[in-house]
Image 1 (cartoon, one colour):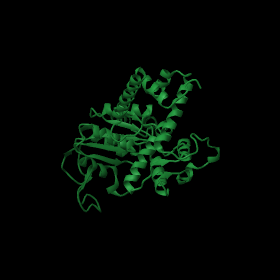
Image 2 (cartoon, helix red, strand yellow):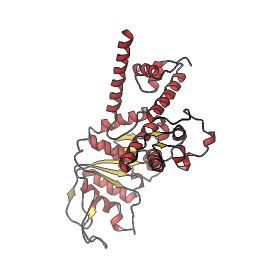
Image 3 (tube, rainbow, N blue to C red):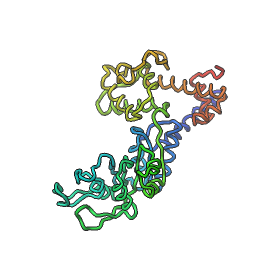
Image 4 (spheres, one colour):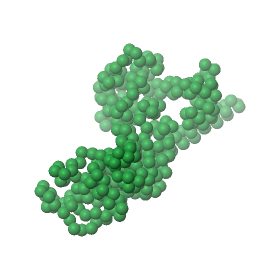
Length: 348
């Protein structure tokens, strides 16, 4: 009877832990790794105020999704979330409709050749909501000055217009380049950097959060099934080995594209290794298999992979479950339950 009561208490503890994990995941973010849990804490904290946010992260790490999640959790959630890419905007003799100023503030009919109608800028469209500036490091010195002036009182004129306008927006900027380094090279304004960098969030590369790969893969499989009406339910073990061994230079975006392509390429309900892109299949003969070479439901394979992670954490900590739990950002009680459920021998 005592054993049964103990098992029930352990199960309740795991349920509470899982609820805590779910509560930590804001919006549509996916991942349970320690790195992402820190990101979630920062997102929820800065969503409570209107401070400017600077998001750092390499291409494909989810900077726009992070900004959108902040907006969805903020008091501005009922108002527009507007994305403005700062790269590839022309300057000087380029298309005047494609300059940073035209995109940000808009223009009146007749403002320049080709301006055949009024065009509202991103700042005006985002009024009351959030304006996300992607690739802010790409802004020219002139564009940096324009942005700085706008940030001072959020007022502007449409190009070719004489009406003084105001837009109440929260600015969130993102960059894959280190703005402090650019600032030291005199390529980015110091005063603009300090205005943008009130709250800073750094997104990890996918290679730094490998424990999230299978969660993300399962999420993307569900999205593909919904989008295309496919019925993929599992990954083969060789396919999982490839996903876990690859270095993912394109980060989460590359994984999403990879899963979509593979799910559409398979002829049954399983993604096989040969369905994955050629970039993942290099040096396959040298790859050490992570799991037994068989096809199984994704939930079973994820349990097996979780067992590998827990076993490695226990080995690193000499079998000390409390220390291993700290490494994995879970409670000792949940660690005990998982060790028991997955039948892990801590003496090995």
